[in-house]
Image (cartoon, rainbow over all chains, first blue to last red; front, top):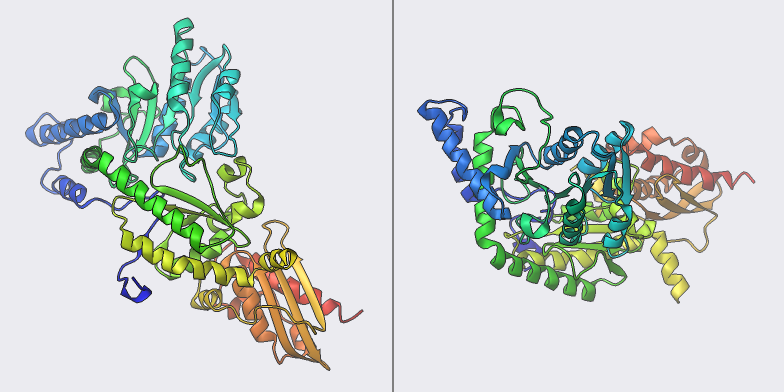
Amino acid sequence: MTENTLTSRVYLDNSASTKLAAEVLEAMLPYFSEQFGNASSIHRFGQQAKAAMDNARQQVADLIGAQANEIIFLSGGTEADNLAIRGITSNYQGKGNHIITSQFEHPAVRNTCAALEKEGWRVTYLPIYRNGLVRIEDVKAAISDETLLITIMHANNEVGTLQPIAEIGELVKEIRNQRKNIFFHTDAVQSVGKIVVNVKDLGVDLLSLSGHKIHGPKGIGALYLRKGVRISSQITGGRHERDRRAGTENVPAIVGLGCAAKLAEHHLAEEMEKISHLRDYFETEVSKLVPEIKFNGETSSRLPNISNISFSYIEGEALLIALDLKGVAVSTGSACSSGSTEPSPVLVAMGLSKELVRGSIRFSLSRYTTKEEIDYVLSILPEAVTRLRRVSPLYRQAMSTKQ
Amino acid sequence: MPYSKTVLDHLENPRNVGELADATVTSSVINSACGDQIKLFIKLLDKNITSVKMQAYGCAPTLASASLLTEWLIDKTIHQASLLETDELIKMLEGLPRGKKHAADLAIEALQTALSKLNK
């Protein structure tokens, strides 16, 4: 496939957001028009909305091996993380004052923990190693009698590495035999719908997930809360979501999330294989076509859809723009692109040099990614890299040293 | 797209890339905050700039600033070159997004550093 024959743009930024599935849109549409009832109302309008919501709750529960009454609908991954961390710490205040998290959490977790630190909580930030993983020994060593909450993400959003959540879950269960009040939360926003996520197998008490990462709508997510675990609501108001999240439910979005969860569950095995196959093909070809690159993250334990590559001697932001001009959407860990002065904390925590962090690009695939699209990217990527390297003083210096 | 057509054009087609073995003055400047880097090679005949080359590492605006600067400098006098300011360069780039002014600053710094060597 040549550049000219590609009629649409290639979207390889599915870790940022995904395309809404056509089936999801269709499922949602009636709830924007004739099915407008408030799920709290007793009349038929309300009861129809409630039935749709109950159905969606079951669909989301099925995707993660939970029960419907363990699912709380809310506005998205960020709110789920906030409710998990703040909900546990405020409900069990006095039962411990220590939180364990990692150095590479999503800002929704990192900044919430940092805020609690200011409020007097002790927070341990576990290191992440070069392979992009935390170590279970470090978790063990960090746990004290005061530890109330452990919150560690399931799949990292930049490199896709899968943390040893099930092992940590086992550890927490063992400790819980001795003392009740220790809880385990995982932000599974990146992993749900990409790999099999089962709350029982993972041994988590709370789990965050988001609609728009699984071809559902934005503005909707869910928190799994294991039966018997209590949280304090962080939004006061009516008695929605069994008193855990006030506010009239966003029925169309909830229906959309349910439908997206159902689709993910149905196609998971098939898609995992197809997507990981495409990703591996992409990586094999890129390593043949482009010299001086580095693949980031432990390849034996990562999501099937993410490829994070550092291109030496060039800036990720410049490459991102160059690719965008060719119709290919990706993202970068370079600070220059996000408007912050701080480079990707994930890649820094993984011990990458400043230059490799700046030259990092994340390619994230979805069920809609085709081989033709990947071939198109492979046809334009080498030239874009070469052009930027030709301008780069770092590249010229490295080449002259080599000669 | 956060960038103007001119910025994108210079990113896709960087001008005057490379080095000048017979440069009259050169400079190499680094933005200590973000690590962006520009190298400039300027060749003079009397008081006139006859050729310019550049190398740049950094985000798109840094590359574009360096590229456009080289294009503008050719056939200018030393005096004209010394008067160029960041805002003027940004204007020629058809603007830069908020927070990206430092890219043009770095290009001007590279120019000033090179010119300052002439006075010595």
